[in-house]
Image (cartoon, rainbow, N blue to C red; front, top):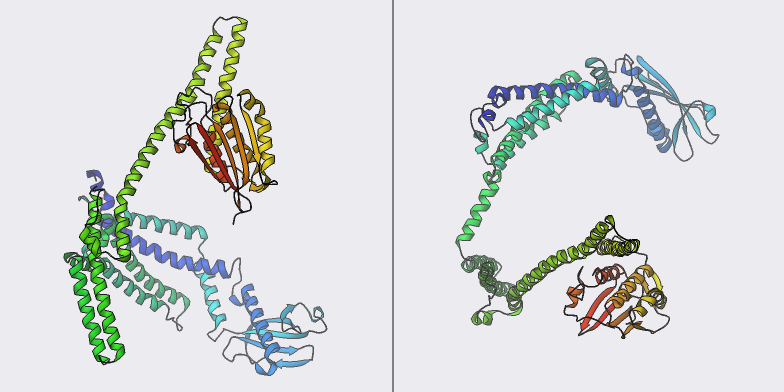
Length: 630
């Protein structure tokens, strides 16, 4: 931190104290004004009445209570209900259908009254109607005269809601914009306190206070415990006080809780800024001490001590349960066996620890001694043998990594060559076209440009197709497909090219009809790529064999074999990599992507694709499922 930041007025103590005072004032205003706004908008939106009894909300409450009263009469009988003596809402109920007075209205002083016609149908449902004529003949109609006592003398929901109405409508009518503004100002001041805490004007780094030296979990327990006591005070209620006085009392209680939360947040912020806050916790210190004690004792002695203590406890329990009973004897023997096994496991753990250190140091030739192997039994011996094979696996992984890196380097080299060759020709022949030339030479140049541009276009299309195939970004429509039909279509397309290459195709489709559960379009593209390879790299005067048959009950296999024109001095895995071709001189116009695309497309159809090389014999194998796979 530079000197300018350290001397900033925002880090002075009086600014932080002013921020705390501002938080208290803003918090109190938010509780007061926010409560008024919430009560007004939630209960009495758009109300302008001078008293609660005149509000629509009060009428709805009276109507709902009247419906509940009639529902009780309908379901439990007229004699089983009576109105509450100490409630502010009184009823006069008359059964209009039977012309009978059900509940008499008490002689009281009333301030507000409403009359409802409530229908009770034969299914026990009740609802309000405008007049008696709106009810069905089978329904029972009740006339309910609902009245509120003058002054609402009893402490019930009506008096509580009147206090809420008076508070929200007449005490502090604050608009929503003011509450939002107070909230934003509160958040800004809180952000400032978070930013400034721990910084002292004139000092570098984070300064921790006295409370920051107390273990964090212990301090949190104290803060939140005291805060819980304050919160419990707010839930006790103040039945003898007015709502305004209750609000003031609750603001003071919430202010105390907020200060506790503020103090906890500030100490948390300072500890986090200083770093390593978790180290100053009781849990961390206790766990660290226990782990330190365990680290001081090697595994075998530690387990031996533990099992000895455990055996003593077990035998003591057995002694209490009468050692000479059969059950106690079995428990004692079983405990001794488990103790020996625990010590043996600790010994094995120590050996494996030494082995892991050896491997971690780079010694890939690690092996267990013959003496140790004599004591290794069962799964322990198997685990040790597998551990010894880790070095072999690591060597294989290193080889695979080196191979991958080499293939990546070759890929970059090959794709650069494949793109550069036609691009260079295009540049050169465009340059020749711009110079003086005869008409015949111009035609020749244009022909070369067309051929090279088509070659570059084909390379680009193959790259895009390989990318889509390898990422699965191709629509696959799997269905029952006639294999012979797809093979015939592919042969029909490549008949001229294969003949021009001096090859003869010998197709053999067994088990006709032969169906595979695949995408015919993708399967055709796979066969097209393989036949294209045959035409490009096959030895003139040789045959291309295509065999298709049912491999087993669930799979179909297609095999394409041909003799290579050039020596296949490359492995099958490398040949299937992108931009790799069998001719190392790369004098053909292929992109080297055909086999890679064929493999990706086959796997998209839930099939398998593999190739084998035996001398100059090239063999491609496609295995597809016969039916939909689960």
